Image (cartoon, rainbow, N blue to C red; front, side, top):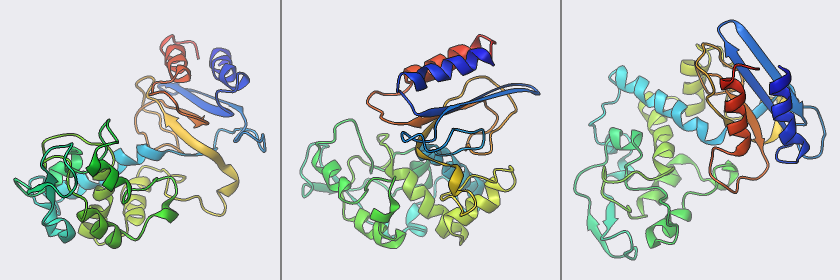
Length: 279
């Protein structure tokens, strides 16, 4: 416990993060450390039950929801998504990734459920943001941290359909957009709003009472001001109520700035601490 506390507190002291929560579990032996504050204003100390925005960790949860519907026969991996997302029935593709958005060709085949799950729909973000089709996508797919900037799903789909694909369906992995499409697919195929589906079919059965798209009134005082990183550390059966991660030990870190790719130094330090067996 002293080593884990010292490891996390070092990054609070040097200003890397305002606060952190770390958990290491080996069987029934669970150690939890909370250090620092919930924000840079030191408005409240970090606590074991502090709530974090987990950002892209929503993606595997949404994918699990899609797979549940596949398993139940509501969806099929090889099914064209236009059955549920008719707005995407006639996409076009830029002739080359560097082509202007009006230099397009037809799709070679329909976009399928599997394309959504593998992030190979043809929409999404590559490592080159300057490409014309990517610039057009930026006009539709805004910053997901503030959903007030997003239109309703039906409107968003109609806008997305006007953006040409960067690649043919199934040809290339691209970040982001396919996961958003998965969420709309789950809602339409199930007939349930995505937050309700996840709450009833995933979070409630797993006892994840504090996980959702928004904090309730009674949870508001526990919400940290920034984003969390969840980092697998050691194999275990333990879970954390505020994390969308199952059957793994995790570390939750408030994100002040993320200028370099993960894993960050604090993540590496946590891994080393956990792997050393000296919590």
